[in-house]
Length: 341
Image: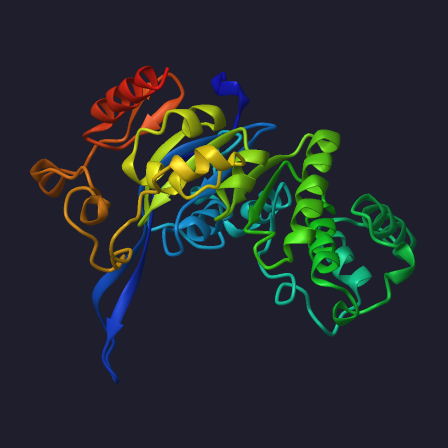
């Protein structure tokens, strides 16, 4: 895709949270490296899926893009405008173009406010509408996300989890944003409801030309909804590729391990497949391993992996990876593929 088609560009984004000690006098004794020097683009009109274990830095990355967390360093460009350099008033004007759907539909809605007022809140903050105009817009939004407009005066506790998430989606759509960050929007919902919400998001994207950053744990769902997929591990991006390239030709051992856990809807193949089981837990972001951060759990790790951090680079057109052994892994995949034919 051309550079002009890039809606969001993240360059060397870093977010470290200080670790302070002391009762009367606080002093910094370390830092939690939630996000560490990552770069990627989000193209206009696409869905970029962001996956990784809990604690890998996915949500922190999203909040840094929206400037709800101030990055420690790095830049975030929205249509070539560096958000990290904007003053508060300038940033406020840009935020209406970027919205977020939160993970927990129970915690993200004020229980004391009717859902119609919740959906209208962005309109009161950014639009000079009359009460009648706001009411009409709220009804349009509720109808668009599949909610009965007669329920505008009801409170969040009167709705199911799926309905509450639809309220969150309607609120995110109120200002006609270009970018919507979906921070695990289906993980707190029943499995029977998840597909309905994802289908709704896809319909809205086609109708309104939206761009999504979709954060999730479920690789099957990521495969369904995403155009490209980015994989994070312990604050680092380890691989970014198109959906098909990532699933058919993973180049990073962590990506291979994640994909091995995705069920295949073919019982004979599923029985023959050997999942890659990662040993141990994800290390602490306050004290990450030297060199490659994945090396402590990687079956391919060599001495070089402990001494030298792999560079982030484009291995093939559109396929980015940070691994010393990417070429060897690709060769192994090609050998395995040729041997199975």
